[in-house]
Image (cartoon, rainbow, N blue to C red; front, side, top):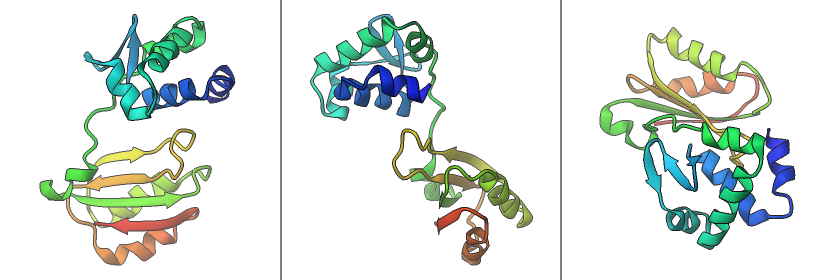
Length: 166
């Protein structure tokens, strides 16, 4: 689908930025409007976030609605819920961020197994989509803080480039 989206918007880079932002934020198109779940997002707010004129947002919606495949995709996106990364420490949770080779399978399962081996449960996992995010990260939020000495263990996982624990 990403190749199709790139092709569809190749002559309209500003619209492509809007379409990617809609996906990145888990927004959807309903009729002529944009929604986050069931909450309407104003065209001007999205335009400001992307750095384009609101007419570009309107044109993007029209381009999407006029294409059967894109319409199906953009009408059915739903936000994944609250991302706890920025509030983890206030909730007493642990946080691990891993930068890795996005094409290498098994990084999440290896990281989860390492955490489980220390009898720590996972509250939330978020993996950035490398087709949307330039420097994707795997973020794991745990029930309690992760011991700092596990950094070296995380770095032993094949494909892991960088790890931060907080």
